[in-house]
Length: 322
Ligand code: SER
Image (tube, rainbow, N blue to C red; front, top):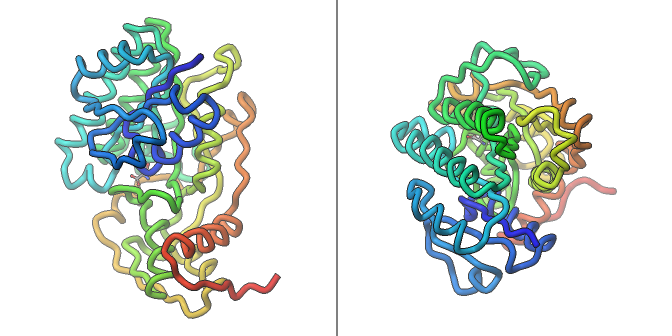
């Protein structure tokens, strides 16, 4: 039996990852943890523990009390919130990860701690960015993600810690909102398109970023988490799917909703996006552990509109006739 602890479990990825892990490993084997209150219904779906990742003793106690084998350390402050409050991002992302690695080392646990396209920076080659390249991020979020990667690799080399990491692109989903990221526009746009028929983008029309639909993000995460350690030739992998600009995404939405309109008012998040790659080379993930995304811009857009319309209770009929 494998007991898994997920930190930041009420975030955009955690919310859905918990469900998937419980369907694979069993309801009682997957421990959700975060610092917020949860509803009775949410508690009934499986064990939830209060865990502030800055509390090293609480971290250790949780791991011991629930006999944890693997940690998925998702708790993190995203890029845009991190630029508004760099001290908080430094604290949660760096010290929280330090506590996670320390406890994983102490109790001999496998740990998956995600990284991001934000680990790259303005001097990184931006097209088909490879796994190993220049990494000089200019955001606090990015700096702490490089820290995750380097500290994890160090713990692996020095202490044999089974550390794994994925550089996620922007993740698009309809179940839980992302909180405070630069790629959040690619989720907000769907809500606004369905509710109001228009959206004001905080990024320029031509700002190209790597993106991914949640089902692929979950598949990649679980596949790397479960991969035999012996097949991994490295510890940190780029994870790519597709890439687009706000204007390309708007055009794709307009194929379904011809009256949808978009305006552009770039703000401080444009500077963040300008330092990130346009596209990722994820050939190592594909070769070493069989990574392969299933969705592209077209299939993601069609599904997002359909599923979100149901959730928002909005009447929706795609203009695309099949
Ligand atoms: N989605 C994240 C952000 O925008 C990138 O990892 O901050």
